[in-house]
Image (tube, rainbow, N blue to C red; front, side, top):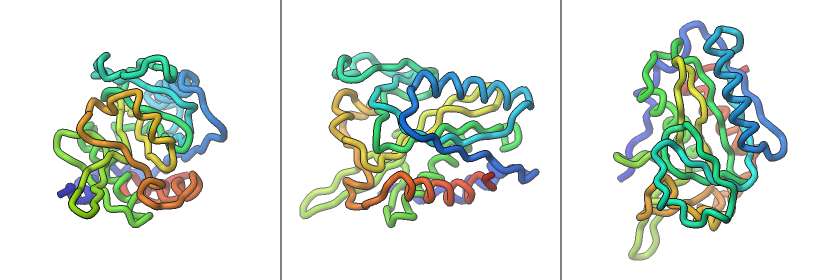
Length: 232
């Protein structure tokens, strides 16, 4: 069984002062190096008290990223797409068209200074988003991300539908989550996603849910507000 939704664990993640989070949706594909540079600048400004919190939604061109725990042997096809080494937590993951990436730059000084609780909040956000489409999802002990269970006559399996990889600097978060809406799932074949070889990867489209980025963004926005508070 997948774990239950995590709404009971995240109440401290809402700011006491009620200050809203800026919600930004990029158009077109954003190069990964550009995104990281913009995140770094924004995080520094938030930490210095010179800017407010931001959630930045975007798509990347096809690429692989390697977190701080990535193992070289989990990169199965190094020449397939560009590979970016990054300071976020986690291992290898794929980003590309049809996948919504959300970079989450929140001031955890105002949200409980609890990194584990913050990650559970990200999980709850994604679980709530998927519930908007009638998809039951959950988390698993020992596995990062959000998972769904698929069943057929005589078989069942658990597939990953959303990834989480974060970094915290001076109690300001960055990097974030990725949700598979309708990516080319064969693009994940060049890596062992998050170092977990015994499970697969799925998407809303693979589950039979027809939704575009706009619909996914609306669901992400509604679920985010329930976990982290108001959005500007």
